[in-house]
Image 1 (cartoon, rainbow, N blue to C red):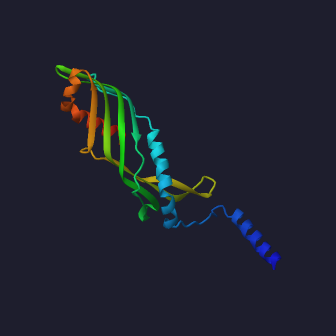
Image 2: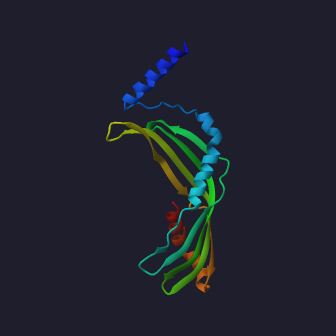
Image 3: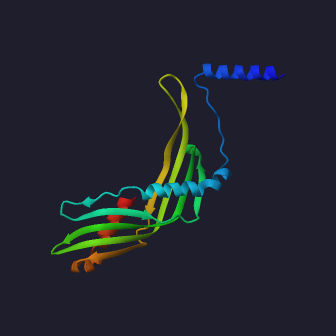
Length: 190
């Protein structure tokens, strides 16, 4: 009996090797992934915290230099769900927060020039990402699995931002320029 099982297994392996499109079929139970979602999302937060935020400068000499962003730890409200049309698994958290730090800015609005540095506290950030699963054919006819990013979204509630500005005397009037800071910072982070 053991010999016949071994022979069938060997025959099956030999057939799979000859068939270049052979592969595996896997099914993931969403409940199992639900248990690990917080760890996966924490890894995404780590990636976001390691992103470089570029310096910004416009043609009028206004700039924001030495920019960085730190996302606070996630809340416990990470959702995980499937996106059937994209054959994807999506994770989403609506209740993240973070702080944008700026080492030096300059903003001129005739005749005033505000200089200094600022912190922008963002209280409500949405981060969503998905992994789409599929296959592709190689040049030699093999079919292999591939993963793509789908349903990627980041949104910042621009009405729930607190700007703290330090600098020269004109920086005290920077509340007049908050639209510049809010729009620029939110766009950089998104």
